[in-house]
Image 1 (cartoon, one colour):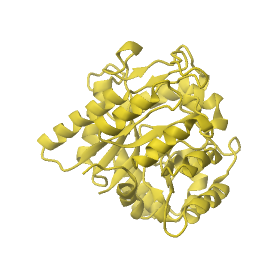
Image 2 (tube, helix red, strand yellow; image 1 turned 180 degrees about the vertical axis):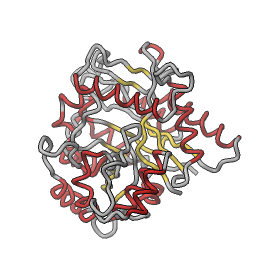
Image 3 (cartoon, one colour; image 1 turned 45 degrees about the horizontal axis):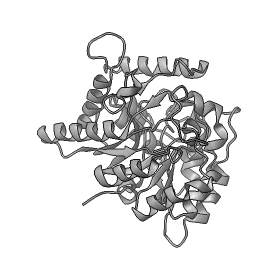
Image 4 (cartoon, one colour; image 1 turned 90 degrees about the vertical axis):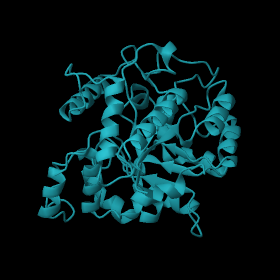
Length: 355
């Protein structure tokens, strides 16, 4: 099965008390000038792709989920999409909810129900495609044990997703060992953002929490880890390129054909990452990679020029430009750059699938 391992949910709810019934999104009390611009660009991009069904120039929660349902149903390249929950920000000291610094909260209860709803719809339409639920449980929260128990035993979660910088999580903290041990005992992989994070105000302010070396603790506890974005920089000049070092780090944990540390290819089609694509293809073995888009982060086709960028042919470029479905566009861009088809199929080997 060809699965996109990295796709975000989003929405327009503003009442944090209704987080189990709606996506909560409110960055206005904690905004950063860069994310203010980014959020407007992302919404404009979704409007341009015709996700705005009622023509009010904004994308509601229902419109977004209806749109990604349509994209998966009509995709020629992928069979499944993993949608991410995102837990709130909790104080590392007290375990209490930090409402002001929580800009986006997609609860496990809301998203697990939404994924079931989308899959029923696909089934009713006679489609064999499906969405998968990617949970998020912060080990900082006081009640992480009960929340993780809910995810493990009452949902069909296939992984747990964390953005350490955004969620104020110090992965190396010894207090999280029980959390990691619980993931290991239940064969639940952990997908972590690695590298610069510009999509959230707290991510920009706490970049040090997203360094790949912080993955040592969960790996030492036996957790299967997926590092997002191959630890690649986002902006040349501003971000340090540590991909060679990260590859050596992966080698330490992937021995004897036992892969414990994977990397995903999400957001690599972003125009600012173009200078790094060839290095990624040549550095990371396909056997260690899984495919992801990072949708709705933009999937740019214009910079991937024929005969200029990494031997992309004119025929490949024309096909990419004619592709409207962003999930298909991302696959075709990566294929043209030399990524193996294997990365689309590897996800099924990594995620936790209940029989």
